[in-house]
Image 1 (cartoon, one colour):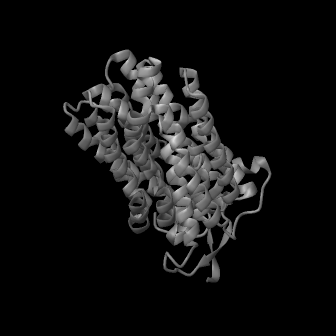
Image 2: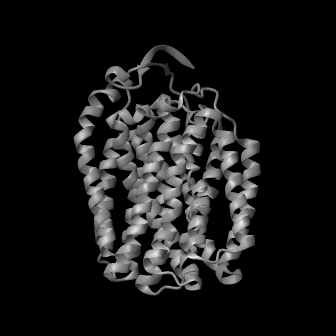
Image 3: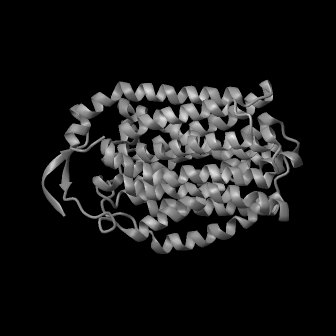
Length: 421
């Protein structure tokens, strides 16, 4: 129900009127089948997006890859996904999220089938496959607007968190890919992945529905208008740390546990799955917590905890110590992912499609940096320590940046919006 009166989407000349909605119960305020479809699509897309990570030890043995090549191989899908998120953000606003998601899913399934049938026989081939898997990572810019546009501002944190919990698909990859690779060979895993992807594609087409309040298409140049505002860059920077840390670790931990502690690929996959599950589980909790106490407070705690945990990991002497610290880091980063996307719709409600793409791109770039830097650090220093310490420093830098902008946010666009950040 829409009441009389208006809220405002931003400060200064960026202010524009928007109807104030009466608060309603979460499950009755949106479209549940679409929310479920967005989650399923996101979940399976993320499963294959990081698929090269759990398979990396076996692929490296077959193709005789160096540590730096392994790092670049698992980082390539994150970079491709980062770039394609912007493309998908534009596509969502032009043809709608449902059709955009359908196109992306078909590309990924076809690419995996081709790779399985033809085989991947070189390092260059793994990079080409990584680019195809980037389309799966770009699902972020489709699934989140598909869900978000159905829900009012007071439920954005929960809606985005539940849809975004699809990053739990990385758990499936870590749990099952190493075991299936041992049983059937790592190339067969590429074909086997198409089975659940195809099932989810059918469910998505049946359940998903484009939201009724989609913005009218704009000229191409207008989609990049948010980049003229400093707040867009702040959100991109914060997400580069929270999501970049999450996906970078998800792609790299199987390699880390096998190289650092000599674990089997299956056991390393189980350890990775435990860490990734922690980060995935708390994403909706992070959104809900940000709804309750404010995204700024939530993010402030996230950056401090993540920085301490990653700094501790750099010198962890045992598997159990490293595992505990990784779980702590992933809990913080997962909550941070939900908190960032509690804030973004409050500031850029009318541009949520392209902002999801831009912020998601930054997250992918952060993941590419972390995964590739860990491989480079191992190649040239013999240890992963520099990679972890630098990213810990980036988390502290993000904390300092948030401290600089939070007062302005609360006094300008958050105050005009009437929301708690």
